[in-house]
Image 1 (tube, rainbow, N blue to C red):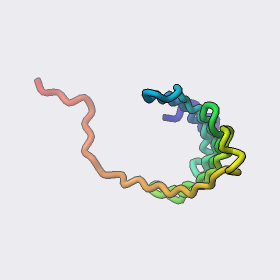
Image 2 (image 1 turned 90 degrees about the vertical axis):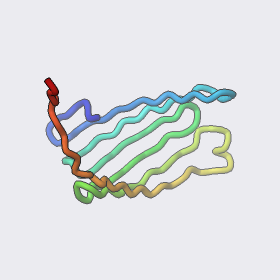
Image 3 (image 1 turned 90 degrees about the horizontal axis):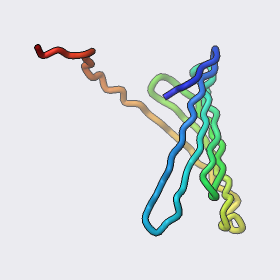
Amino acid sequence: MIIATAGELKIRPYFLVKYASNAPLQYDLNLNMLISDIIWVGASYRSSDAITAILEYQVNKKLRVGYSYDYTLSEIRSYSSGSHEIVIGYDFGFNVLKMKTPRYF
């Protein structure tokens, strides 16, 4: 859900809290910006674990390709310099019949 727009710039922040038994509570803070409905630029922070930079390109209404880099903040950073990720997203966009406030009486 996009919550703010300013001309050709749309901003989408989101927050995620994760809990699993026998593990510490973890949260993610994310901020993505959509520029001219084509380019996504974003950043993410996972509590005491990683910082991520994200770049995506909206090829058309259904296809999106991108790249992200995860920089590790935890103790594993002495063994890892981070990770790279290639993203391919496809929206199948099934045409579903939508009704506005159906009335049965």
